[in-house]
Length: 136
Image (tube, rainbow, N blue to C red):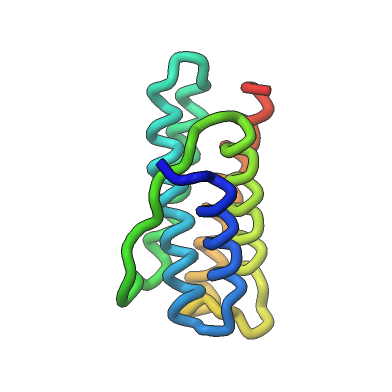
């Protein structure tokens, strides 16, 4: 398992990249990692499984509206402690904002697909935020 700050920082930098392929791949990776993180949280004893499943499903749905990356590999998983989950929820909020932006989005998808993905990304952000508040 990688250090959460390193993984999340790298993904945030890639989302901000001027390279549209890199930004699009990072968006896909954020949602893939979000799905895996939420799936892991689902099975933890002290977690609201319904919120975790909602986050996982929302990440999966958002990813359906984005083109698959042409190269690369998925990021490593991150720890499931409260601070890492809260940090990841903030990364999902950043992604949702980028997807909703009508100004020259670096994410390669139609504006309708980006807005739909943003709705699901926002739902995932809200579910993971709720999980991190309950755990704190």
